[in-house]
Length: 62
Ligand SMILES: [Zn+2]
Image (cartoon, rainbow, N blue to C red; front, side):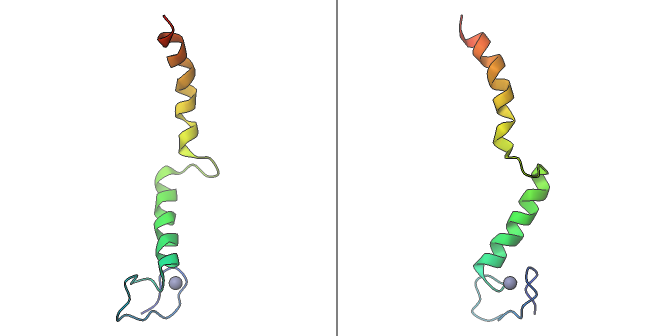
């Protein structure tokens, strides 16, 4: 069996990270699909609500 991330041979028995060879490769693979979900290359998703912030400021001050 090969690790899907780095294609190294994976020890199948007693391996809590299978099908990956290590925790690192498991996290890399996880990060890969998280990236695809957000599809915002180079920009954090948090920056988007900041635009709304200006509108809210106006309605909050009565
Ligand atoms: Zn690996």
